Image (tube, rainbow, N blue to C red; front, side, top):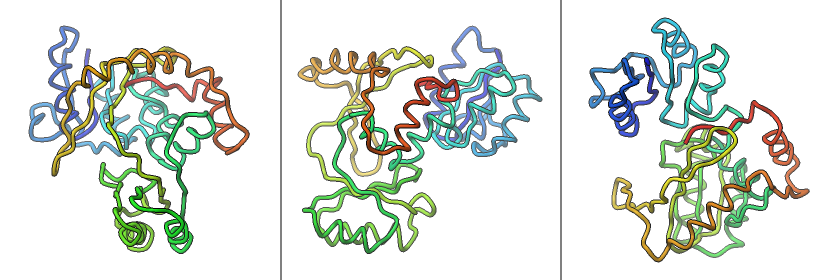
Length: 270
């Protein structure tokens, strides 16, 4: 099997390293890759969908594994499916959940999924007015993809306004900050729940927690006292199709209904 891993980070290095251990792997390519994957690298950008399709066809790739969110939001899975190549990732329609924080919040509200109270803004003065009505700390988020750097926890009202201005006014995150989300701050422990999904049934991985020191995130297993949450989360995951869709957010209602019935809304991958 000839496999293409898409991306240039440490995640893609790990994917290529592990996939290369499989007896099914004949050859591994990484586009564009990094220093750690040098022997597998190919000079195709992870956002060049047409270029990736061309490479897959020329090299007779059997399986594609996107690492980062960007190619997924640009429709790499749909493009590969169109030429009959399996791709381990959600469709462009489903990747919108990752590509737009504002949209994902709308979907959570429409589906009755608990989430922090928030407001969505494109106008700076309206954002300032919202901030003035709420107590700090507040969380300011760029709507789009910002390489993991688009979230600011503001400890004061002025910090919140400065963060909003940096995104909406100063374009700190470019187009990713054309829309911002201002959320209430939720204090407490955090864990990540990942699962493999074939488009129908999720299979849970052990939930880790994230530790964020000065510059990099690290992972560790969840404390034993959190173990009781795993069966509950598993139950919730297995009942995703039983959403009770609210009457709010008609755009999200339409998306959720389509997600239930359309193959274009295939949530597969990790």
